Length: 482
Ligand code: F0G
Image 1 (cartoon, rainbow, N blue to C red):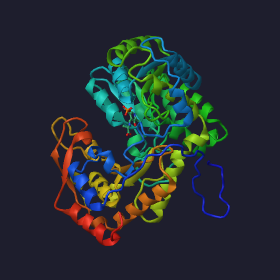
Image 2 (cartoon, protein in one colour):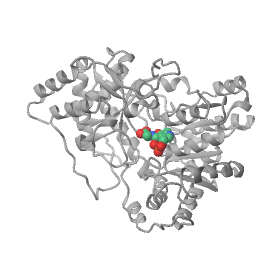
Image 3 (cartoon, rainbow, N blue to C red):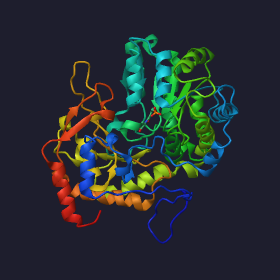
Image 4 (cartoon, rainbow, N blue to C red):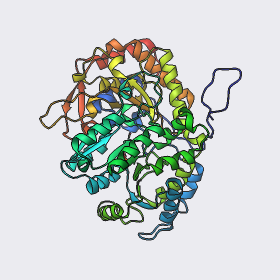
């Protein structure tokens, strides 16, 4: 818990839960790790779980559930229409967010599909603090253009700035003037801004965005998938809210927005998605799309069991002891890596620890995918599966030109309540070894490159034979240790 102080030793995060169910892990010898990553086309998305020791790919759908969530799953009311489970979930959503209309969907990107189809017309613009991959793809599919208006400080890799997810309010005003308010489909704010390192925005910034939207008659949409981390950071870093409860901060945020959607694979530690609004006309427009793409309005593609787990999970998200676990572990990992000279994104954000590949392997040009190369090297070094969040995660432009990402990151997700502190220290150890041997890491090139969201299924290969040489060096340095 955040306010438990250690008296005789250095402060470290303390879990406010105990483990009840475990899953055995397997750590392959380095030669097999090398083989596995090469068979996966150096793409960590294509690894088999049985070959992975620490799965730090994402928190999506893999946060640990509580005993109360699991128990709730047993009382799910399974019926095609009119399920009691839906009523229970609707009530909790209304209690927490104060919005009385709720549409269920099977996951976050399904919400994005529905919102984009209902609100984005060809030639319109969507200003946002920063894009997420699936969000931008849906907006583009409907003929819209994303305007990224993150404040300059958000893209500084190392800083003391507490709210790197803030939108630049001046640029928002100017952008609306430039494209004309009638051409703005909506403004989107992403909580715990994923692609810049899980960085939060402040409530003050959201208030600013909200008043500009109101002046111009534009809807404000909140992507609340990573809300839990953002809430914790507001409580800890924003002076004006240090005495507010998590529930009060949530209510205040929701009052500033017109639409809230989220991936329940993240928020609420379950699986599914939700769209909330107070706008009856918009609700009716989206309703038809939910029935068409997702399912009947009382389940929207979710299993009722997951809906019960979500109902409890959302209530648990209002508990500071629960939401502190991710950010506190992440900050711990960031500090340990920083102490050892490893370039990481600071301050620690939510979701995971983000390694700055642009600096870690600064000898690899962006055209050879430094973050992808580092992610594959980390799997060889420790059986640790991270996620490339750099140029591989960008698609080529309409003319087939490569778009170099603003940042080259390897994200090491810390799903909530999943890893122990010793596992985190193991990851720190292997990353540090890799950093000491960083000059051995080389670039990658595509062998198979899908046109859309290529990072999911694209296959790459090493340039030269650096992966083999790295595995040999590991064997030499670690002897017969795994
Ligand atoms: N919005 C944000 C901010 C997200 O992080 C995600 C998913 C989505 C929307 C889409 O939700 O996966 O349920 O369809 N992020 C996952 C990740 C994939 O690993 O960061 P979804």
